Amino acid sequence: MKPILLRLLFSMFFMPAALAQELAPDALVKKISDEVIAAIRQDRGIQAGDPRKIHDPVDAKVLPHFNFSRTTQIAMGQSWRRATPEQQDELVSQFKRLLVRTYSGALASYRDQVIEFRPLRAKPGETEVTVRSLVKQGGTAPVAIDYDLERRDAGWKVFDVRVDGISLAANYRSAFADEIRNNGIDGLIALRASRNGQGR
Image (spheres, rainbow, N blue to C red):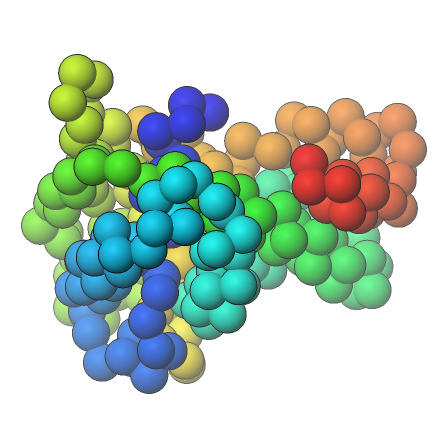
């Protein structure tokens, strides 16, 4: 995936969890995005491209706004149903570590992109919505980034991100399926645990 496509994917999740319950999904995404961009611009370590400066905030503040269980189900496809509850828990844990690390590196690469949000198209009472945005940077074509959110008891949660129509979660499905076919679900878990430990 292009580096620019990842730089702002999850900049919108850095805010107190309580606020997520008070805002509409599009307002939530825009408010957090604005606040995080301002914070990144003030942190010299992040500006220097150091993902370690942002890893802890990602781990602490992204997670409350994301349904990693559903994201993992998307990535696993039909194989999810074959996993035991214990395997499912471990798959979610490993996939979460993978994505959090990816987002940390992406945010550490932030420079001067501009995000434009589209009007929310949702009917009253809908429990799943898509917040659409365009990321613009001089000299390159705009990148469409869409955030799929679902309404849960704890507020709106993101369960997938699509970059130019490509699902970030489903992007892993082929590689996961190949590993499961060759080494089973436990093999996939072991591989992801190994690579997460190596920062890959």
